[in-house]
Image 1 (tube, rainbow, N blue to C red):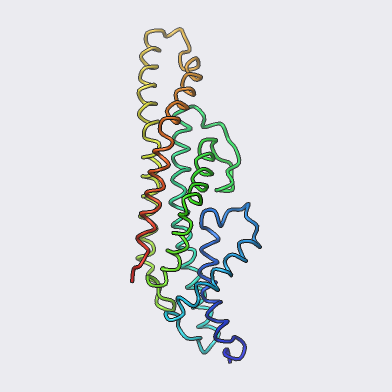
Image 2 (image 1 turned 90 degrees about the vertical axis):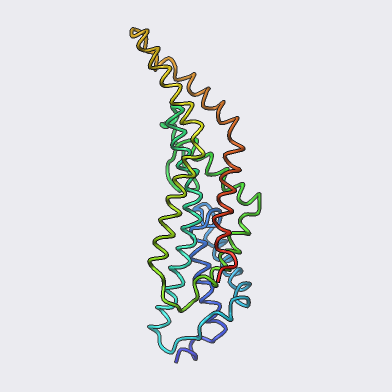
Length: 254
């Protein structure tokens, strides 16, 4: 019955579109709230048309009943959301770094709309997020994301049982890596801030009648911007290297 309502060629395109479309809902750059849904839909459909001939050999035949079809589509959507979430976890390391830097530079209360996370965020976190997404596209790492998404058909074969244990373990590893990467990016500010606060504490003990912490806030902000000017390029290079190495693990696996 399904073969009369849904031609086989349309079924294969639909199956590929489910995974690619779900992934592009969360992938950085493609799944942002400021990107028009029509553009995302057209791009996902175009990619599905390109990828379908490549992965058609690994696609299962069309199920005989509607229930099996819905189960198969639901599995593809889960895999797509899983892959998109992994890339989003990696980019969130910049948000973590921005929050830590904001606390170390007394700029944590400087809030601005973060277009990457679609919510209010610290000024420095928003700056790092936007700059990180821009560099992903400027260095063509978005091509690596799309290639890894196409190669995911060799890792997660359509129609096979979903390895929920492996999915949970991989997601937890990426979340941990994201927090570690954010802390590594912000580590120069943590060290400088610790030394700075120790010095202020000693001055406060020597001159208890002076509000030394209030007076030192402009100096702390200036010191934070100076550290950022010296470490920004190295920090973003470290982020891009980790982003690339994390995605390379999905290429050519089978």
